[in-house]
Every structure is written in C-alpha cells, then in structure tokens.
Length: 94
Image (tube, rainbow, N blue to C red; front, top):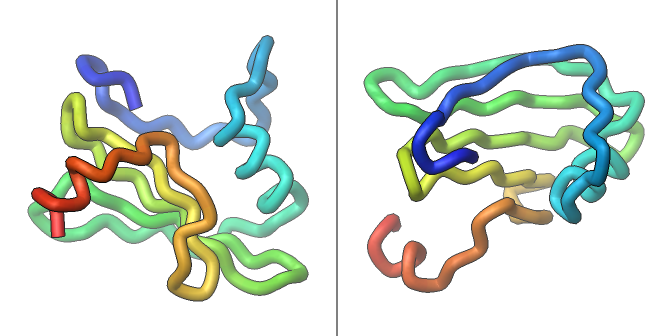
C-alpha cells in the first residue's frame, strides 16, 4: 500500500522482520488457507483474492489507488481489518 509505488506481488512465503498489526491479523486468519480465486475488477485498480479456511471463505481486497491504496480483509461480507482505516475516505469513496 505504498503511496507512490502501488503494485501487488503474489508470493508463497514472506517473513517480514517486524510484522505490522494488519499482517499479523491476516497471518492469523489465513495461515494454512487455500487461495481459490483472484478476480480483477474490469477497468479498475481493485482485485480480490478469495481464500478457503476452516472457518469459511475470506476475501483479501487490494485497492491500488496511489495514496488511497488499501488492503481489506473481509469474511462473510464484514470487514475484519484494513491497512488504512480513515473515516474521511469513507465519505468520499462510497
């Protein structure tokens, strides 16, 4: 979610030196999960990775939009966590 260098990399294993809270949340929910789909929204900079876990499906949504870039983890249509939580953006991005 870097504001200038927005891009996405799919990797099998990535061990950061000091994981941020969102990375810990994602690791806790998706460790051992199976990636079942990657879907890009046509003509948008948004894509969704769907994971199957023992608790049910999770969606990791990536919005690559410059300084407004975000990663959002959802389960059952409910936001579980996000990198960028900003109430000002919610007013402008509905």
